[in-house]
Image (cartoon, rainbow, N blue to C red; front, side, top):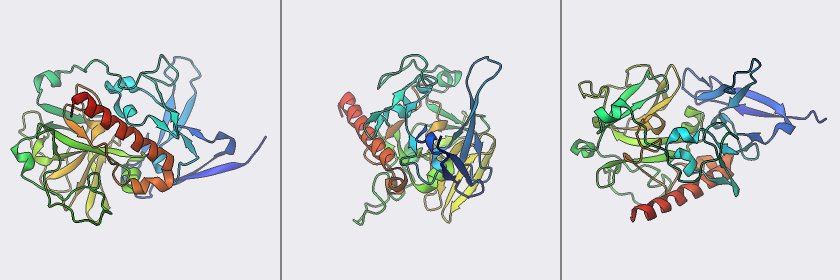
Length: 333
């Protein structure tokens, strides 16, 4: 039996949790939490099956965004717990890699029948949804970080900002349009959302990409009544929120208890922050499409992702564009 091994180096954004994993070469390709307390990067997850046996097998899952490279190392085989999303979530964006279809399981892999593309479950009914229909509750897993987003208003357009890479690539040398309220979509009824694959986002989250919604701070409050507005002074501080200065001009925020990514805030963009879409508790599902319009034409900073995950980023771009085309056809846009 071959004893050759292969080592993978994993690192978070701040390098405090860097480590090397050595596995038998026969274990590759891999089938696709512990987080750094300093920068919030998710590194590992300890997993066990949901059964009642006395000898439950414990496995460890590695957050692939921390790996130096996944091309030829990680095989993307399935989406799991798709039923939890209510709307298919990210599974409708990433459909295949290298022409190999990705399975879509409602819960654990191999249990029950797979869910079809564009599957929808019943809307989630919670007291918050009925009591505050024009507010979107956002919170982390432990709910140590909790806040509310209101519908776009006149205040949403009072600030302007330079155009982001998800709309106009940073490397584009052509003259860019003047700063604007580009985050307002759907005739001013929705906010823009997009995917970022820059190295900083990847390492800060431990994931291959982060889904961000662009929200003016004027539309965020810490209570549903709006008596407690979003903090004005930086770094922002409320609940279990922690922050990490990831560059000279940017600060990232995460929950210090459960590690959930929360915000990205840029010094040159006051009054507007990126909110991690995974926090949004929308009645219609994980993509929160009654609130957000997804940017499907471009993945932000895809140039960072391609050298280490070429097949994956190409599969994402293909699926995302297909989803955008299908959405336009369904709405008659």
